[in-house]
Image (cartoon, helix red, strand yellow):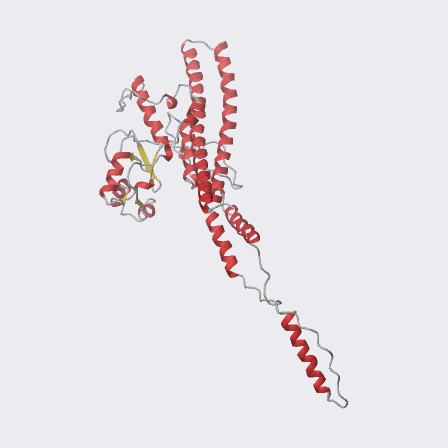
Length: 389
């Protein structure tokens, strides 16, 4: 038998493995799609240079690169789909682990609700049949037979009204099945699209596909089809209708509190705003460890129209705690790309200073060592070096 301490240790180890799996999948989907984008961009630049020279026919090197990119595109698409499927499996396993305590509680309730079985009566010794005296009354005989029937009820029929006992194994199996059926009854949107790990995965995937064009991530309601299958493509396709063309998203890489370019961008699970780590921690700490998002609060103070689409959301602002914050890897990638662009002089109007220690693994145009990326610790799950109080 396993002790309670051993069980808790195994549970924590399992949780740790699930967290690492989620981190590796998050990092790999960005890394492999970064490689694909870099190769596609190289092919585009090669074609642009050829056309600038007035050449119409593709050279041998361009044709070779074009074939390589097509093959790479198919491979990375397959790897991305596999990673997405694997992440959903990790989320399913985590949900099962989280339901474990509820399953055990249901088993205990089932055990406590069972009625104890009555103690069996000792078998009665057989009595010699009474000889009926001559001229005895028939009523005395009927009374004797009735007494014998009552004795039989007390022995043979005493357990008739008590339900049979159900073992722990059967109760555990039934409780697990109920929880599994309950989870499977949820839609794919409820299981995954509102899960923070899945949201981060989709953001990283989308950002790798559109590192230069700030195309907004489609609404989570479009991530799965009516059959619960993930929709192909990380962004909605724009068409000829001007009203349906996807608008470009303006990403401000400055912290709303410090008004400086963020170096450690931290987001939260309550709203979509991002801040410099030191600034938001100081803001929350100065408010007793509990504060409303400063951006949401500012917008709400200027939103007095109940018919505004943002009004219901703004009226339900959640309190922020330090433990709600996490390092936003997607925004960090954008910051580093912008810094690299400034260093190269791509964007002369950029207000971002180049960084000496820019992470080469997320710079567009350079190859990425995927194995090296997987060996890096999961920065999304780093603990914030501040008290939660």
